[in-house]
Every structure is written in C-alpha cells, then in structure tokens.
Amino acid sequence: MATASSFGAVFFSSAFAACFAEVCTIPLDTAKVRLQLQRKAPPPLPPVAAVAGTGWAVGAGGMLATILSIAREEGVAALWKGIVPGLHRQFLYGGLRIGLYEPVKAFFVGGTAVGDVSLLSKILAALTTGVIAIVVASPTDLVKVRLQADGKANTVKRNYSGALNAYATIIRQEGIGALWTGLGPNVARNAIINAAELASYDQFKQMFLKLPGFTDNVFTHLLAGLGAGFFAVCIGSPVDVVKSRMMGDSTYRSTLDCFAKTLKNDGPGAFYKGFIANFCRIGSWNVIMFLTLEQVRRLFL
Image (cartoon, one colour):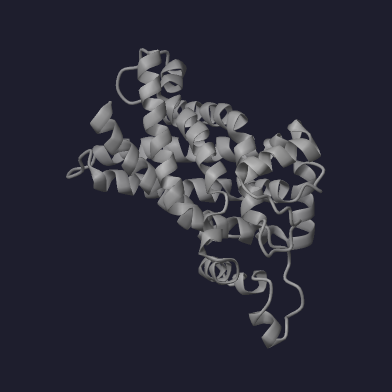
C-alpha cells in the first residue's frame, strides 16, 4: 500500500497528465457530445436552409463536419466550451482513478503477489477506482456536458455564463442533488471505461515488454495507449451516449427511460453515435495522457 506522501505525488502527477490531455483533446469531446445528442434527422432541408441551418444538419456528416460547423457558427472558442469543468473533472477524476489504481490493485492481490498480476485483478482494481473517482467528480462532468451542449442545437438553451455560474444556477434552480444527474450511467460508463483503459493499458504494456525488441519507451507507451483507447470506446460507447443525453436533457426520468427512448426513437445505432469522434477523442486522450504520465513519473517519482 502506498504511503500518504507517495500517493500525493502519484495523484498530482496523474491529475497533471489528465488535465494536459483534456486541454489537447476537448474539441473532439465537444464534437462527440453534439453528435451523441442528435435525434433522428428531420426531413431534408432545402439547400439554402441546410447551409444556413443550426449546425446540426451540417454536423450530421461526422466529427470533422461538426467541428467545422461549431467553429464557423459559434466561433473557434466554442470548441473549448466546458474546458474549466473539464479540468476540474480531470484533476479530481484523473487524479483519483489513476492515483488509487496501484494501491487498490495491491489490495486485491494481497500485496504479496510475485510476478505478473492477473488481468482479473487489474479489471477489479480499475472498476473500483473508476466508481470512487466519478462519484466525487460527477458534478464537474454534468457542468461540462451542459456547457458543451449549450450551443445552436436542439437542446434546452441554458445560457450559462461559465462553469461557476453553471454550478450555482443548477443548485439554485434544480437543487444540489441535480449536480449528480445521470450518476447511474456516469458510474457505469466511467467504471467500465476506466477498467478498459487502465487494465488494458497495464496488460498491453506488460505484453509488449515480453516481446523481443520492445522496451519501456515512448513507442511501447504509444501502442498501449491506442489499444486502451480502442477498448474503452468499443465497450463504453452505449453508456456514454446515455450519460451525455441524460446530462444534456433533464427530461429523462431515469437511466432506463433514457435507454428505452433512445432505442425506440433513434434505433440501436444511436448508441454508437459519434463513435469515430469518440475513438479519436479517447484514443488520442489516452495516448497523450499515458505518454505524459510516464514521463512525469520518470522525472518526479
């Protein structure tokens, strides 16, 4: 089990790596959220309307079209909407889920394991730290999603002036408990994705280091990070869509209600809306975060 001082060092190095990755990739996350919040397309617009429309018709073509549409219609800065609560989230969530991973993994194997730790122990440790971290950080996730969704879209226009205004407005208008709106799918999503990311990165890195020619270097970290990102998106995309829709639209009564309405109104394909954007986001996020984390650990730990 890590000491308090060593945990503090790991927490801050993990939080720094997660925040740096967030700043680099949040435009992709904004595009992903907008795509996930889309409903079934309305009847085709006339050519002029399609060009001068809300940005959703133009953005329906995919991630790049959505990014260009947001930048053109709302300004380039709109791509970084939600960066402040995004950094709040990564400081808490990233610091806790990564900082607690090794101590919790040691707990599951009894702290006396010799040699390779089993994949099951890695998955259990990552699931546990994902749940703990997102219960603490869920309000920051809610505010981030609402700020990202609050553009020229077919969602409720809330006109928050910023992150702190959003926190205060939600508490005043909806009650403090509303900050944990969507906690169910958020816990499910983050526990699953955290397990996919941390356990698979740990496993890929362990596997690569056993192969001839591989060493504990940037190339190995890059491949392991890409593998972790791919697994995370494939496994977590459906709950990620439900989480984004519940946080972006407070009319859903529950996780099951959101799931059922999404399935009924938009079909099963809706659960993989924004998949490419999500993979670009999570794949690049994992590569940047793990590369940064490995370098920071070598320098300071």
